[in-house]
Every structure is written in structure tokens, then in C-alpha cells.
Image: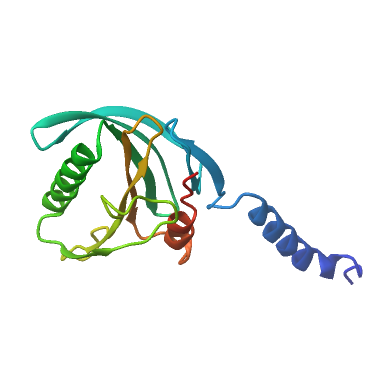
Length: 180
């Protein structure tokens, strides 16, 4: 005859496994500063950082990026510094066009967006893209700009690529963008 303790072991083991799983979440949100202009983002994992030259129209622009991949999606923010509002407007237009061209035959919806403390010109814009191929990754992008103290403009592109395993992950990411 089994002891009275042995019938409680499987439920206790299952409960312990659940507690341990809760201690190592897929989405471990953290505040991450981007560039030196004050933007703080919420990323669901420890970010990698990179710099690269991005062709925006006729210019090659230095872009800083912070991002990570978890739960079936990549979360990233890219940043560039323009010298003037006119240059920022031109770069943002080129950045949006370059992104749309990379998405090819994808069904895209682009609409005005809002972000507290973002510039009205160039205005924030949101792009949602659903690829036509089954299994291809959807893309959500938000472009926005911020004034700099020296008269320049910081441009940003916040992106979620893929289908996060948590249904609210993309919303948390975009709502976690904070300009000073």
C-alpha cells in the first residue's frame, strides 16, 4: 500500500514546474535607452546593439539599432540624427519607401499615428503589413521624430517582425516607447 505522501508527489511536482516556468518568462520586459536623445523603449529581452549605414534617398545615413528576438518575433528600434526638420522629413519619406519596397507584394496599411512628445512634422506613421504567403512573418512599424536641443531632429523606426507568442507583446512594445 502506498504511503499517504506518495499520492501528493505528482501534483506537487506539477505545481513546482509551473512556479519555475513563471520565473523564466519568454517576455522579460526591461527599459532600454536608445541613442543619446532620451528615447526609452520597453524590450522583451536583452537587446543586441548595432550600427550601420542605411541609404535614405541619395544619402547614406548612420543608423543605430537596439533589438532582440523572443517568443517568435523580433523587436527593434533604429535611430538616425538629421541636421534639420527638412532633412528629417526627406529621410523619413525615404525610410518609409525603402521599408515598403522591401515588403514587396505584402498587403500594407499605412496610417497616421500618435506618440506623446513626438514631432507633428514629420508626423508619426504606422505601417501594418501582412505577407501573402502562408507562414511568412507580419511586420508592424512605427516611424516618429523628436526635436533635439541643437535644432536637429532624431528619427526613429520601431519594428515588430513576426507573430509574438503573447498576444499583447506588440502592443506592450509600442506603448512602451517614451520620449523625454
